[in-house]
Amino acid sequence: MSNSTNNESKPHAKRRGGVITEATLTGLRAALNGMTPREKGAEKAAQALDWMYRWGWTTSSVIATLAGTGRNSALAARLAKNGWAKRQPIRIVSSFHLTPTDILSITPEGVAELVALRGELPFSRQGSVSKRVVKKNVTHDLLVQKLTLMYMGRWPGSENEDLPEGYGPVTEFTTAHQLGEATLGEKIPDAIWCTESGHMLAIELELSPKYGRELDQFIKGHLDLQRRATDPVDGLVTFFASPDTAERYARAMSVGRRVQEWAYDKMRREWWPLPNAPKIELDANFITYEIVLPRAAR
Image 1: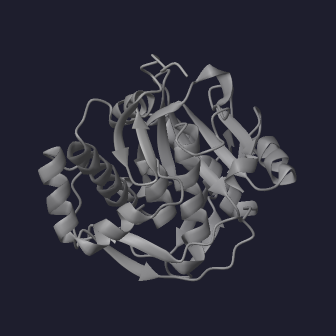
Image 2 (image 1 turned 180 degrees about the horizontal axis):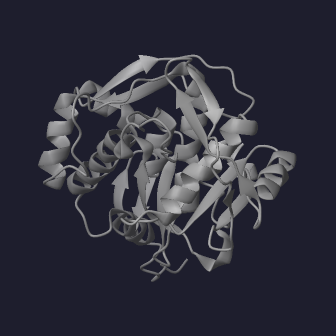
């Protein structure tokens, strides 16, 4: 029997359970992207710490997706073991395929490590670096994180998800945690996405549909975001669980629709329609898109 001269299939080194071929080594080098394993591990840790810092909290599954390890939560466990992340057990009931068993938030030691790895923080924040976890909002807030990864092309099975009008994939984002607390009557979106085309889009996820005054204020708040003098957004993208709700919002935000303004009476602790104030008429410059949640997000 003649010996094979195919170098690609020739064993390169022995290991338990088989051999490492040259093709395997080529794949490993590509995965490391020119980094050493230690450098690659540090970069994955930096991505996870940056994500936690910007969103206020996250889950092991999101960190695993960031690291490209599927459902393997080894990175989350390492962050917690090093004292860079705090794990908080949680149980939620959701109609979506979201069943996190724990919440991870960055610690002061994690913030110091992020500075050591990246040289600076993505933004400065007064007070606690983590966000208080409100259990009833976990499904909503986690879905916003998942949608952000999906439209960045980072969530498995979401490669074909794209925004309207050829905006392209999301290349950068700003979280509600970064934007800070809203003042009375001000609208803070769930996130702001910057797309490949350079557009800035306010993002909203509406799992609990609004009506009446709350819907008027939702529309007015986003109209203000598009009309503000500094860093105006180019449009509003709203995600819905129900096609019927998406259609109702589309009608409410259509050209020619007149929106009532409201004022808060501190003495009575009630909202009242502003007297003698003309309703705001929406025009074609108010850009909105209504999207039913993609299957991969459910």
